[in-house]
Length: 332
Image (cartoon, rainbow, N blue to C red; front, side):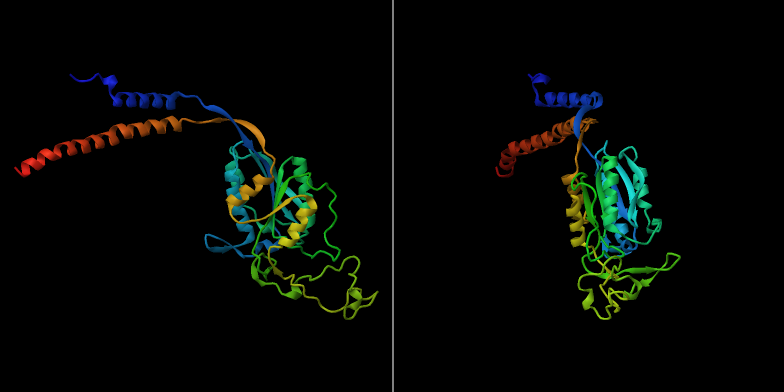
């Protein structure tokens, strides 16, 4: 006499698979709390960011293109209900292209905007990086967003001997990350003509090698050709390698210490996401989470067991039980 179906393991496994399938079809979304972030990123568009001393997929690219790719990946990792704003830096101040907007609903627009960043958008050729960071901090504070500032730290003209300009804000009031872009080895700055075509590299005579505004340095009187009125900085050419460039990490660390920002060198997108998370102030949001994949996956696993694993086990057991009889027939 055969056993009732409800006493078989298959019956209960198939019943469980049916219930899980129904749950996957009709279960409502679950409301969960999670962290979201508000960020505004400013990208340095000055000429030194055209230097090709970084690489993507093994191919050399400009610092600007490298920044754009990593920034796109960063936005793609931001959780829904986070907000992202974008701006540019050149000369001595930043300009906001758009204020922080929700990343998931506006992802394609944000991604396209980052992709269209171009060094020709710069309205001046100077690069007062420290002043730009100061301005970006003030803007990020007004937007109540965590700051991301991407730059190689190359000041043009160079800073005076007196060092960093004074910071008028309160260090640490605005959270943010100063992100250094570029290689650590000095390479020549690319040169462009008036039409924006690259024509080679700059030489020492093409670039201001020393900031001679304001008071001369204390050692100026020991320089060749020094005169207190006619040549207060001396009259000999100076070569401070300002026509060469690398990521200025010492300078950027000093700016970060002055302003209360954190500093990180741009490498991978995952690292940038982690570094940002370490300094950002998250806000708690409630979001509908779709959990239908979990009961559906479990139902599929049960069906694999019922129609795959169990028949194979039964077939193997059947072969083992009939093996002695076959042996006796083969050797009477």
